[in-house]
Image 1 (cartoon, one colour):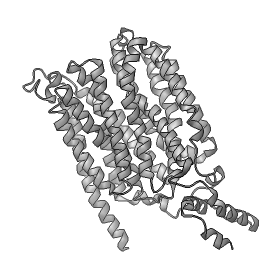
Image 2: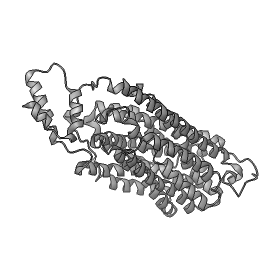
Image 3: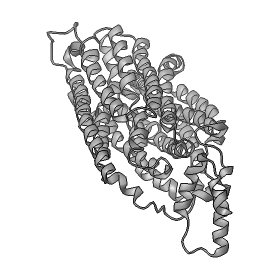
Image 4: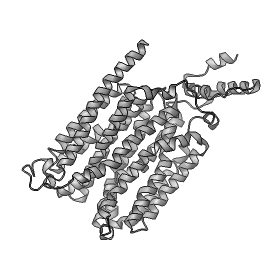
Length: 475
């Protein structure tokens, strides 16, 4: 009778059966065993995956979390320009070094936090939702506190480090919950969530300059803190997991080696290498584009427009490539976009970006091609782990975030050492390479080379992964 009932469980309940089978304690008594099987049969009462009100309301709310947590550091260039123009901040010791690091530090800490925070989420899932509320409060307090300081060091601590800590507590559980709510449409879901950062990067650079000019940086930070709080509070109740807490808490997963399979996959090793190199190149235009635009003698509005359109184009890339990874070979998509980004960098940034029109064209091409990279992660992960194991899928997402975060943090000081004028350039005024007396030539070459190397390694990894899959099938 129990066997017949278990077979009646709908396909949508499969992920829960996978977890319960692997979390089932050994040595249960007859009564306990009966209770366990009863709970297993009742799995069909859980909310459906890949659809339904619970899944879509979570996805909508997670999109707004991404917009707030990631959109703010993506638009930090607007604040940086205001800080550097204000003698109160710019005249302080090491201000030219510390102020640009605020945005990089924020996103870098969030990226690199995955290997630390995800094990804590699995170990103490009963505190996950509480931590999200605390994280939202920390984000509000960090911006509000930064508005009352004129010290550059305190700005770094509040607007950079403290905001990143709150953002980590708020954002990382969303990735874990996403892997519970979505399986067949996981690529699309990840693309929708990632699009939040692009949406924030599109909207904020257009809105912030006017507010800063009218009220100054301090009042603007307070306004943003209040607006973020008002937008977040209605969303937090919908940010929850699909699995009941009792089904998540339990002994360590015994997956018969499934949790170590990815370590033996040569394809995933190539993914980690490509992902790291892509991170060393991707964030460079986001940091330097406003400064590049100022060397073209563009006003603050046009400088913000170029960055805003880059982030807006990333919105298209994350949604489009996120949906494609559910239906197409992820390696093919990755190789194509990396090669396209390499060409866009050398041609778009290095050649035609000597005017506003050329800069906007480069920003939009770069945003579409490079901005959707994180949407490929679920596609890479599903080739080495079971789609029905949200815990392991989230763990690997954490490793990918960490490797990309290394590039996020280190690419800024690397390119800062390269950004020096070379004197009068023979191509000045006719090529992007010559803007600012050749100041950005090495930066452009560095960025394009990163994507060229990443595309080459991706091509090799694609071949190696296919060979490994064929050999595994024969065995």
